[in-house]
Image (tube, rainbow, N blue to C red; front, side, top):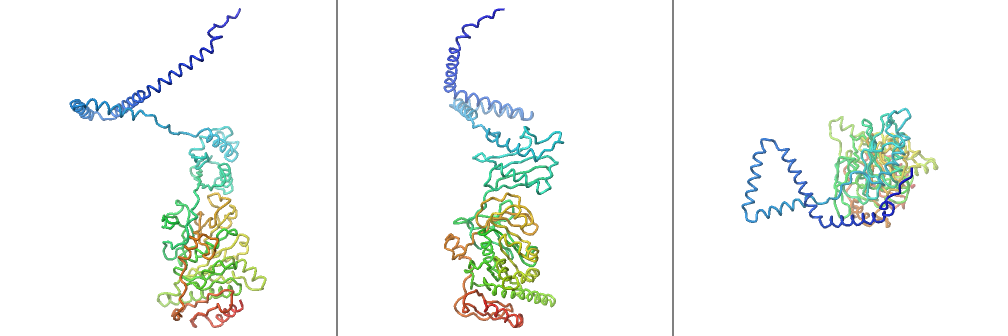
Length: 552
């Protein structure tokens, strides 16, 4: 059967059809532009009519009569008012135009780029959240990612800022290693250079990942609003603690969320250990603690690094000694051990006799050691006892005697810490860049955030006893004599430093608490003797300490 030829209009008139379609489309667009106000008003009238009909349908039957009567009365009143119908018509047209205006469409789902990113993240999680025996897996290659990613949010650059993942019930979310693998994968796929917070809801099989804002690093040293026995280690996320304190940040005052460490005879974490890399800010933390401790107590400082980071504290009111040499450090720590024993004895006698504890016993004594590992190496080379051995009495009985010990050292010296130090320093701080393994070894638990590779000085994590691991930013507390530091931060430290004692000789104190001289490894004329109560410290011990200081 012969095939019929196509009609001419279909075989050779395609160009004419295309041109006609373009003319029709142009005419329609022009008509739409011209009639756009009318279209808007008609759309608004339709929406107003629909809204009125819905309100009438929602009105109870017993109230429809009064409403109809009120509407009729309003219409009659408008009709009788001069120019009333015209004003009513203008009002209705204006309301219809406002109701029918074009609105920016609300984004109800991810765009193409965001969908591609979520699809890639879903495919990457398939090997961890699926098993071959699952008949209806939530995660499968080529599966529906919308079933598992119930919530998500992106920033202006198209990177994830929040993600909620629903995972199968058989996933071993109780194992730290399994959770760490998922957190590391989400961190890698969502973008490096940011810090992510993970919350695992084991009961509902949900994992929520959020991007954390950087902690403020501009808060300098100042007198914080705290109760006696409280020390501000630094500041953390607002939702991590239930307390805020007012702080000065430059020229403004705001509320910040502090990490408060409580000491005293009722504290469960009476001593603190801080570790970090060189330049991580452990010395800054010790200096910040010293400035806060001097407001209500006395301070002994042992600087194992010998770099003079605590030179501004020498001779200040409340600073009993600042030592950087081995001989002076040993003598000072030996005195601190005897002072702890003396406090225990006098406090026990007072309680047995039914008398109040003497004021010198209740005044806190702080022993701050920076880099004790260096002094330990020097002591081993010289055949002398390790300074850490002299801390056994303050660490074991310091809480009852009002003595607090703070140690700061680097990661490479953590293995040299004695068992007594490890056991009794239940408040822990890790500063500077560190791996999850290092943080877990120091704090006893892994953080629920991903440690960033680069952090400012004083940035790290803190854990008080068995509490949660908190992000921490230590207040900027540089050496006020360091010319490389910020002038504003140096001035802030000078503002909170205790005043130097006056030139006039002071009367001997009537307290029974002995006070060692603030000495250093300098010339002998820098050593000053302080009156000591004979009945509290044996003469032989005092002579031994003075001889060791003189040898230094």
